[in-house]
Length: 341
Ligand code: GLU
Image 1 (tube, rainbow, N blue to C red):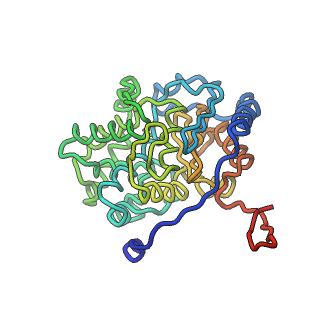
Image 2 (image 1 turned 30 degrees about the vertical axis):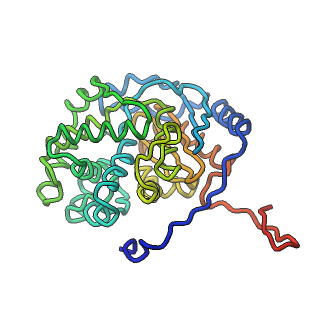
Image 3 (image 1 turned 120 degrees about the horizontal axis):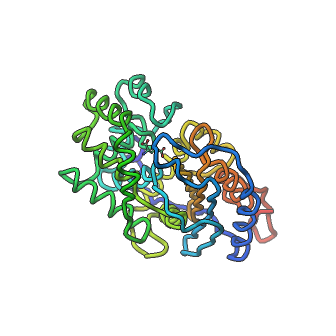
C-alpha cells in the first residue's frame, strides 16, 4: 500500500537501551517473586495432552539485543510452542513473498473474534484476516517455501530453529494428540479452500501447521527468538541474520494489533508492546531495539493468555521502561541539547 512509495527512504530507528545488567536481573527476579504465588487461570485441555501441564510452572527469560540473558524460575521446562509459532512463520513467509503480497493475500486487521473462529472467515468473505488467528496462520503456513508438505515442514522447522539458535525438535505426543482432535482446524482449512484462499492441499497444510505448533521450546528459547525480532532480524546469540530488518518490523506491527487473541487492544493499552501468546502458557513481548521477554506459566484467562505471564509483563514493561508509548517530559540545556527528566 504505502510501502512501495517509501521503499527508497532509509528506515531510521532509535529506541533507547535496556537498563544495566544488574538492574534487569534484579527486576526479573522481583517479577518472578511477585507473581509466583498467583493461582488464577485454567490450564488448556482442548488438546487433551496439554492438561498434563503443571499449573505451578513459572519461568521468565529476558534476552537483550547484545545476547545478555536474565532468567528466573522454570526457564528450561519444555512445552509446545503452539500459537507463538505463528509470529515466526509469518516472518519467514514475509521474507519469502514480501510485505505487499502478505498484506494482500492474508491481511493485517484484527478479527475481534476467537483465535479459532470459523465465522470470522465467513463474515469477511473468505479472507483469512491476519496470520495470528488460526485461519490466517493455516493460510500462511501454506505459503511457506517448498513444493511438498514435507519440504514446507522442513522450511518451518529450520526457520524457527534459526530464530532459536538451536535445532528444535517436535513433541510427538502433542502432535499426535492434536491431530486426533483438530477437527476445527481441518474445517477452517476446508472453508478457506472453498473460497480459493489456500495455496496448498487443506489436510496436508493442517498437518504441517499442527507439527509447527508441536515444536518443543523453553522460555529461554522463546526469549532468543523474540530478541531476534528486536534486533532487526539478527539472532543476538548466534549472530546469524534470520530475516531482514523490514520483516522484523512488519512482524512486530502485526503482533501489536493481533498477537494477543481478542484481547490485543487491551494488551496494548495495558502493556504497550508487540506480543504473542500461546495456549501452552507462553508469551513473548518484544521491545524493538532493546530485547524480548518470554514468560511461561500454563494457567490461562478466558481469551487464552497466561495469567501470571500477563502480570509479569505488565510489571516489567513499566519497570524497565519498555512500553512503546511511554515518554517523560524533556529538559532543554543551555547548549541546545535535550534530555529526558
Ligand atoms: N495448535 C493450536 C490450535 O491451532 C494453537 C492454538 C494457540 O496456541 O492459540 O488450536
